[in-house]
Amino acid sequence: MGFLPNYDREGPGVPPDTPRKTGFPRFWEMLTRDFWDVFRAGFLALVGCVPFLAGTAFSLYSHVLIFAPVFGFIGGALAGPELCGLADTILRGLRDEPGFWWHIYRRAWKRSAKAALLPGAVGGSLLAVQVFLLFHAGALQLSTAMGAGLVAGALVVLALSLYLWPQLALMELSFGQMLKNGVLLCIGQLPRTLSALAIMGGYWGLVLRFFPLAVTLLPFTNFWIPALPALFLIYPGIDGNFRVEERLEGR
Image (cartoon, rainbow, N blue to C red; front, side, top):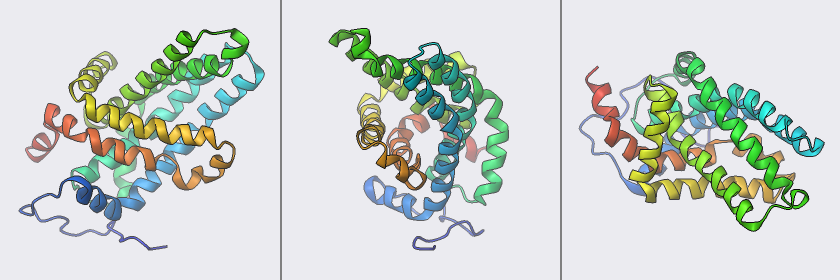
């Protein structure tokens, strides 16, 4: 099972005086070097989201609205630590930080698990309600404008989540401060945000379009396929605003 190089072994890593690649060569370097780490973190994120997905599906097919926010809240809270763990794994690859993945992942998970519960719960409940209303748009006789508003709302939740999980992985901030930073980052690097959002939205749109066939592929594609390029795109703004690498080098 080693069709890509294994970089879990201890070693010197990337020499400090080697110029970092940019653009697609940099992305390809990360993909080939960190594939198994990102894949495993993405698989755990998928497992963590199973309660949310199952609860949302139950609310849709039972046609009971109150189930959506309840199951979304619980499932989102359970998924939060794993989504934060995935972000931490990708961010470490972006920083060229060496180490044994499982040891680092467990340490990062324990550090951020409690803080990730509230963002996961709030985001999960909002997203579950929006999906429920869109699914029942015909029965509820929602106007086109209302449907478009729900889609826009779901995209806003997704866009903010792109910046919330990296902040949780990197810093200790209040939920309100992370939301404020997320909004400012979304607007401040809007082209990158929209590109990352297009990747995330396109991926999950394909999953829904080819449901249930796509579900059988999720264990292999899981969350790593959209998360890696999305975080790759928005990382320059995160690093530029929070001076991530500069602070870590000086610790």
